[in-house]
Amino acid sequence: MNGKPYSRSYILYQDIMKGGKLTFYMGDKPNYDFGTAKEDRPVSLIFDRE
Image (tube, helix red, strand yellow):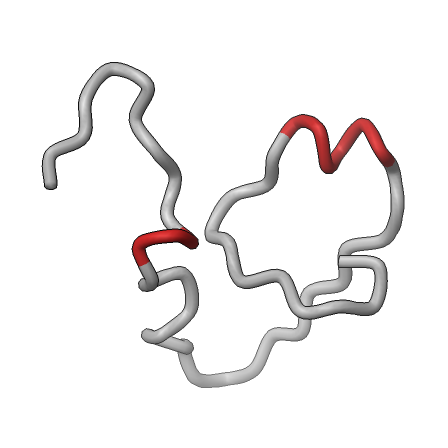
């Protein structure tokens, strides 16, 4: 996002409202590691299962 790596598997509303540029680079093979870190996954506002 804005020329820096973005490791979250979701986009925050606040980030969208700030504007900027989000570029996706896609290849022919999936990246199974993207968004797997706990801090990069969305948080449930109802409960946390872990």
